[in-house]
Length: 160
Image (cartoon, rainbow, N blue to C red; front, side, top):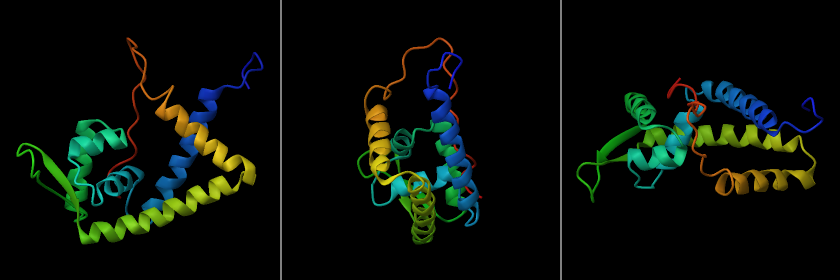
């Protein structure tokens, strides 16, 4: 609650997002992965997307995407292959080892999210997720013009 008695939505979203990211980071570290790496690998599975397209989907900048892909390639989880439609672009292909690690990571992710949502009453779970989804896809989907916008935080390092 703010000093005026109004709910501070930004602080609530920030605190819950930070707590969830911290818990996911800790759990995924157990298998040597991070939330950002999981997002990139999950987005790349059988999608035929380029690095740039995945960066847009995952909402990370292109430099962070390159660093993430370098780490994923070094770990043997993904490869960059020439696009069949644009020789300048690289398509991200998940290796068999990458498929195995992303399956483990997705299971851990589902456990954490299930536990978090499970702490809410049944009738509030879907409403929370649906409401947040509608905000991100609608009203809050495009940042407003701002002379000094807050910096987008990148999720932690790419691989363990």
